[in-house]
Length: 121
Image 1: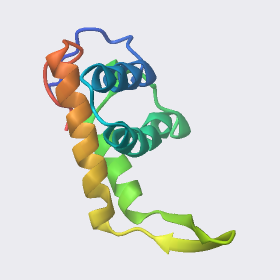
Image 2: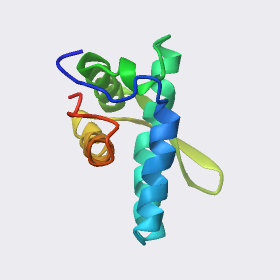
Image 3: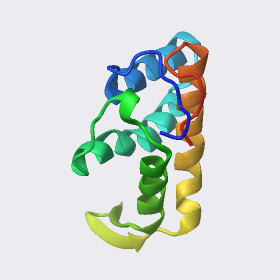
């Protein structure tokens, strides 16, 4: 696990995410800011489960995080462009940067509140 120490290995990623969003709300962050983090972190929550990995904080590994970011930067996805029309788009490596920053902010918050002792990247 590359030296990451956890204070509670049973904490689920969803629980961590919910606490982070609640913290942003209690700090008075704008709805757009909360939505920004929600949209970028939410895809990560299901990724371990889709891969058959444990979905708790204690099982986070740098390799899995890097794999998620690689997937984000190489996936193909549909987006709506209006009038019910969909456009198929291919992500590029730069697409992963906002996801990385959002996850880093989540993990920094987790350190602040005692869930983690270091960032798992």
